Image (cartoon, rainbow, N blue to C red; front, side, top):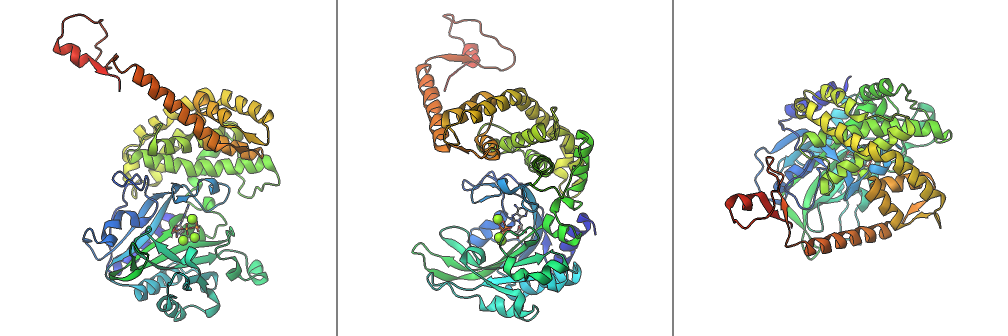
Length: 487
Ligand code: ATP
Ligand code: MG
Ligand code: MG
Ligand code: MG
């Protein structure tokens, strides 16, 4: 089965169960002060759960573009080092807004995985919330009973509040969840050790694929739970993980979601991707991680720009610039490629996702141009910056890059602090991030002070070629338009 067919089957399955198939929301969140990027399928439906808006359909399903690189969910440092956490990924989901509940959700997730996708039942584990007496949270008896109707007892595992209880925030909708994990190890390994011991233990072959959240409580300001008048289902399944399981691969990057991009990187760099490289041979390992990082990061970069978030120096734009610079450093240092590379991958992605996310296809030239300009800009300072950081590392005291050195790398060479941290860690060093923040603050204070001094100055607006002609005594309208106060 191709990844396109796998996605299609998900949609068909839930359409047949009465779900409306809706489009993905943009990956960039513009109207929520608490969130920069969509990090789960439920984000776009938040108002339905909070009761602020009425859902237009009681059941929906979709694939949602997600990004987990900041805030509550930040998987950036896992990416490429492991083979199943991405920056950008698709989350397949089905929802019930006050309609069906645990019984149907559990029955359908099991039916889809074992009958449609035909994952062997003896490779699956399911979890349910065991309850938490201290917090006065009840055990999820109902979910347990539903699972017990179809899953062997030794494959149903209790889970604690951390893994199996979901809350939107300190107050608001919350409830227990049930997760589904797949054991992809060989028969031999499975005989030697039960997969039950490896669930939720970051084992690369025993991975979580699907989370089913059952929203049934409202947490009030005083911390007490009250039953929600309408109960909801919110599920999220990692598409790339599902594809990897169904295609029988050991890594998401070996599935057809990524092989096209990896092949393109091999073509461009004339290097070979070795999926089996281990840290035992450090050069090979770095090269393999670089392949995965590039194949991952270009997705985050392209889809975000296509959703109208340009790289910049602040907020969401800086998150994208950081990811891009991180990727540039990986190919520069570990694939020995010194020219802009990422922008050459944009057409590969846009073709692959033409029908699912046409917004990238429609803007591919623009996206590639933005990426190329960003790459060129960073490549202008990277070589010198890398020399500088080598010197800093060589003379570092207490195995730490101090705040002012990290700031110089940022300010003069364009190194985001997390890139400095990454390189520092590769050399078994830390970065004094508090010191870095203090330096940043000082720079802000200095520029604020400078601005205050210049408050009476005027600058020429760069609009339509009018040029500064000097002050004169005639107070004309034109002059007012030509000059703007420095703020
Ligand atoms: P994990 O424990 O593996 O980090 P999670 O518990 O943080 O996953 P959820 O918030 O439950 O993930 O999201 C629902 C599903 O989305 C997960 O079951 C998983 O399949 C997928 N998923 C989560 N994070 C990522 C990621 N960074 N890359 C790819 N898929 C992911
Ligand atoms: Mg996680
Ligand atoms: Mg988890
Ligand atoms: Mg989870």
